[in-house]
Length: 441
Image 1: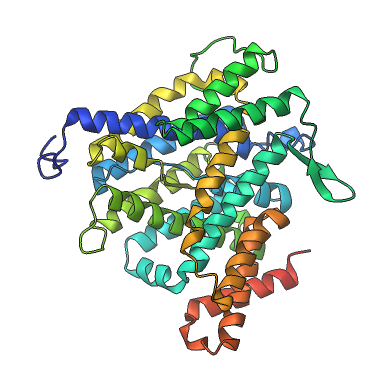
Image 2 (image 1 turned 90 degrees about the horizontal axis):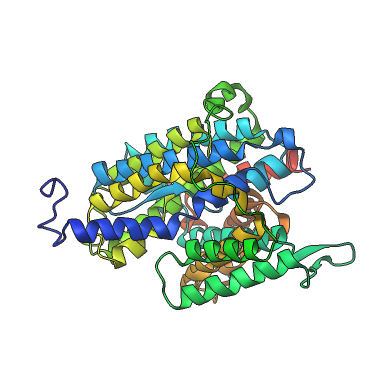
């Protein structure tokens, strides 16, 4: 085992890897509870219940897909990087695809499934480098930041800190109400834990907020802590059954967005965490193809089980900071996800007011890379800014990407830099123009 995971070459041992794997799990365990609430549109009160995806099934699917992804990453790529359904991608699935586009969650899962298969194909060929190079780095950064703003807005809205206003569209909610005050308390606690660099700050912030909600009577205490694993029956295989529903321009945009965001989110996280762990060699990531294959395989598995796109988690950096260096840590994280399936009763105490602080804080982390964009270059600043700002303002991640990708070739052409724009970007320009002409109404 030690030889397989190269403990001696990486100067590590079982203790460091187990602690690292546990730290990573605690840092990202919040997804087990945030994902079911997000995908079921729990914060949207007027959405028909018969159109919602089953929370218990999503909880189990999230745990199994995460476990499969982590274990594959550990065994195949041998990196201490964990995988789980991505924040932002789950919001795109729920709020853009299901709520705004009116596409059923079953068909949306089919879109995730197809994007996963394409991702697997790209991971097995040399095409991934070409696609990565085709998208300008500034737009990649803007997409990530825009998703951060979007999920922050979702958190503020779901907790009623921000509410609808007929005069100004949005305004501050009733900050004297108990649930809103509970969210504000949760934000403060989570921010303090983050500032103190507590491992698993987001998870522990949710835990403390939920306990505070129970003590104040704002949340009903759970009748039990441990129970049997929720059934996968409501969601299992729906992605396969509804494959015939994906043949439309709307679903083409959905699949492209799932693929695009998942692909670059994974690539960015892999490089960031590997750099922190000192695993990069000559500015390149060894076994990158294997890592991308592990990630894309878990997307396919997750879609069949009943969850949105999985991706590599930047929270893995917490495990690396705690000493993780090998794939054994990722295997440990995966096993912990399997054990977590028995704690589904806790879903009842994780309300929108409990998850909102997590969404808001994760949003802060996602906008941090904006500092890498050269805002003095107007031809870059405009598409980057529009990509980022249009996501929360249109309540659609896909629309933000479309607007930014339309403006990028325009600004570059009139700047005299048309040859610097990759042909793939011109193809996307045409696709998104057609999207607005024929479908966005």
